[in-house]
Length: 304
Image (tube, rainbow, N blue to C red):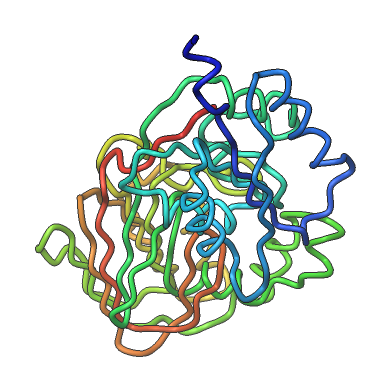
C-alpha cells in the first residue's frame, strides 16, 4: 500500500472576515487552489463582531488544519496570529482589508489574490517576530504597529462609512480633525532604562516600518530583527507644531529636533499620567495609562 493512499490530504483553514467587501468569490478561489495543489476540502470559518478571529483560529487547530489563512484585514491577521504564535502551524495571508499593512511590509502584492492563495499553499516559509503587549493583566499580540495617544485616537475616530468609500484616506480625515490636543506626561522605559520623560502626544511601537500611503514611520524596522522600534511624538507648541513632527519623520529622526525621538529595544514600558487611547494594528482597544510590550523573536511562521 502506498503512502499516498494511507495519508489524508492536507487541509487549509480559511478564517474570513465576512464584513470585508471584495469583488470576487472567495470560496471559489480557495477551492480552486486547494484542488490544484492536492489539498483536501478547506475548513471554512467566519469571524464575528464578538469574536474577530481568536476562537476561529483555535477551532482550526482543533480540526487539524495544516495551515491557517487569515482572509481579512490586519485586525483578522492579528487575532489569528495571537493563537498561532509560538506554535508550528504556519499562517497564510489573503489580504482583504483597508490597509493590509503586514502583507505590504512583507512585500506582497495585495491586489494579487491568486498569488496570495498559491503562496499560502505552496510557497516558502519565513519566521517573523511577534510583539506581546500586556495591559491591565491582559496580553494581546500585534505584528505591525501599536501606540498610545494621538495615533490611537485616529483609529478610534475614523468614520467607518467613509473608510468603506475612500479606504485609508479616512484615517487622514480623522488625523486632521484630532490635530488639536494637549500633551500628556509620559515615561518611556526601554530594556529597563528610562529614555524619555516628557509631555507627548503619542508613543508608537513598531514591528514593521510602513503604514498607510506607504509612509515609512520606522525607517530601521525589520519584521525579523528581534527588536522593537519606538517613536516618541512631541510636537512643538503652536499651530505649526505638527510640522516639526512631519519633518522629523521625513528626516528619519536624524535631525537635532526633539519633536520625534527614535529608540530601539527588546522591551518597552509606557507609563502615562492619565488614560489615553490605545491601539494594536489599527484596532482601538480602549484607553489605558500603562502598557508593557516585549518582542518574541521568530514566533510566527508565515507561508507566502
